[in-house]
Length: 290
Ligand code: NAP
Image 1 (cartoon, rainbow, N blue to C red):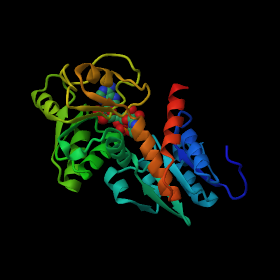
Image 2 (image 1 turned 135 degrees about the horizontal axis):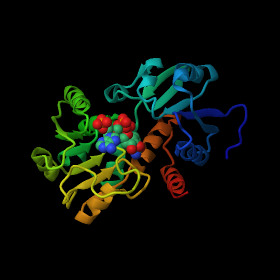
Image 3 (image 1 turned 180 degrees about the horizontal axis):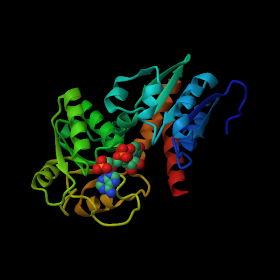
């Protein structure tokens, strides 16, 4: 642990609840590895205290904070500025306090793309991508895939209106075509799109229990050879979606890399320094196995 003194810069994460977060361990290890006099703590303001909590970032001079569920959208109302990425994603996961001005960033989507490219050598322009889900994480993934050159997207969701709204937003912001399918096994259009997709991403919490086989509306043979099956869930580290994909011969990934890279990008945004990736990865793996 870094020695704390009068010059220590304070960072943190705001969520509700937040005690499950791996970010304090990951970011404190990063500050230590980089030799920075900083500390990162978790805050859980109640929903009616969110505005006061954001004012507190300024009042107390916190250097930066992450924002997690359920505040990624609500926090936007209380910030001075937003990056283009945050506006496109409709959510903020990182706030920088620069001389009392709070700017909201979103590093989730860029973290996802960094993991695709950095860990899997996967280039989004390679082909079509199918996303299961249309919530906040799907939005960040869809916007960043479209921005990174993906030529065609599909969203599969129970709530069709939510998916159609997300599709319209991505189309108008990027011009990339986005189809919407119901969460329905045997749907012919969905099966056909899923077969030709090169990337299939689970952007839902389905599979977090680690139990069950094929809870997804995909043919049993998918994801299959030549496809990358990416599950945003990282705990458990080996999900039902990944198990099905592996048994069919697809490549697989869990969401730990996205978590790592979104944190690394936040670290760099706050400090201007390259993040100590291997230290951060080691701590995340320890947190999961612990
Ligand atoms: P969210 O905004 O609440 O959206 C949840 C999505 O999952 C919606 O599309 C919802 O469908 C769908 N869903 C939920 N339960 C379902 C079920 N039983 N069957 C089918 N669909 C279901 O949540 P989020 O922020 O997008 O997060 C989604 C997942 O991504 C979570 O597991 C989260 O932990 C993970 N995540 C990981 C990272 C990372 O760094 N790896 C980052 C962000 C999020 P409806 O719209 O039909 O309700």
